[in-house]
Picture 1 (cartoon, rainbow, N blue to C red):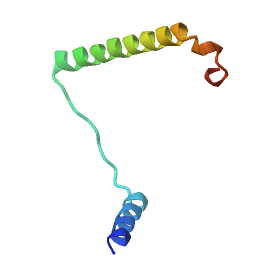
Picture 2 (spheres, rainbow, N blue to C red; picture 1 turned 180 degrees about the horizontal axis):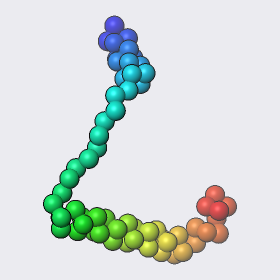
Picture 3 (cartoon, one colour; picture 1 turned 180 degrees about the vertical axis):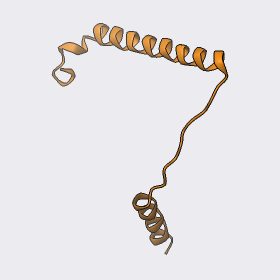
Picture 4 (cartoon, one colour; picture 1 turned 135 degrees about the horizontal axis):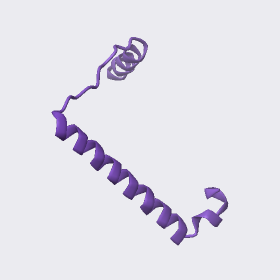
Amino acid sequence: MKLHLFILTILASLFSPVPLWALQVHPYPEGLIAHEIAHLFFAFAMAFSAYRIKKMRLSRRPHWR
C-alpha cells in the first residue's frame, strides 16, 4: 500500500508541475563578489581538469576521445 501511495505521489508531481521562482536578491557588492568568486572557482576547476587529462594521458585513451 505504501508503494502505491509513493508512486501516485511521484506521478502526481510529474504531471501537475507548478512554476517555481528560484530568485535570491543580494545587495550590490555581495552578489557581484559571489558571482566573481564562482567564476574563479569554475576557472580553477577547468584548469585542474585539463591538467589531470594531460598528466594521466587521458586524451590518448579511446573512451576519452
